[in-house]
Length: 340
Picture 1 (cartoon, helix red, strand yellow):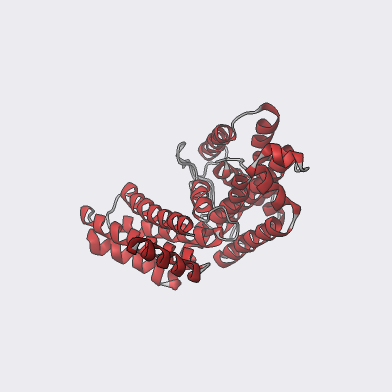
Picture 2 (tube, rainbow, N blue to C red; picture 1 turned 90 degrees about the vertical axis):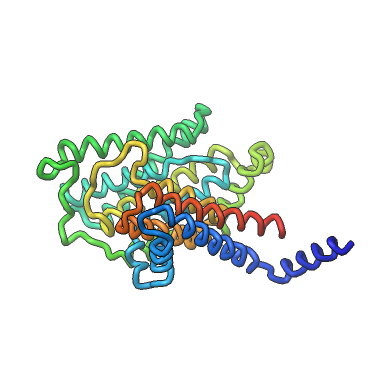
């Protein structure tokens, strides 16, 4: 009886906390993840102190946040589209390929044809939309697994980049393109703002239009959704187009606000930010608005990883710290939902 009373009191406290409970659980997971990562730091050249300094420096110094804005923008453009797609049961992992083709198209238009920035961004988004649509068409009419087909298209995008930077677009014999002209630019703050506004817009679209109802209906039960008038094929095609457009736009924004040239890519890792977008989408529990926070969180972790590299920590070990922290945050968020 005493144990049951304690459990009831705990649940009553959780109910009183209401919507803040998930935040508190998430913060608890974040703190514990940091502590475990710092402990693991004794096995690295940086030591526990170096790992603590790198993590604390990024998260407690807002002045360093703009350095993460290009990563944040690319991750968020991917994450918000994926969140909506996953809610519909369309489990694509093609955001990285869409980012890459968006970069390629934007560079081609800006460097070789002198197009305006706005035109290049829109066209890059449209090409990304078509790249995403190809996966949806294969899924809807041929029953091809979207996870597999989107992964293969990621490899195609990487192969295209490696061909271009090693051949016709090579600069000085190196496997990279020339830099974009200085007249073509976007500030990192503008890139972050555009990504954030896009995420808010997608959330409004999901929350206050019939698309959101169709997405949730199809994701819950395809047969039941179609019984009540929500078309499976139309819904999947729309979310694929939306996610692909955001991916292509994100790649173009990252190009003009980030590295400003295209370099060769690892065939298995690609650009990487699309895969981080998958993580951000699930970390946000597929809430398009919450992907803003999860994408910034992952971008800051990525920035901390680069700081750890400067202290002699191998990149693979730095990614391990990121994985540990995200794992604890995800686990505690899951625990908060079970308690609710």
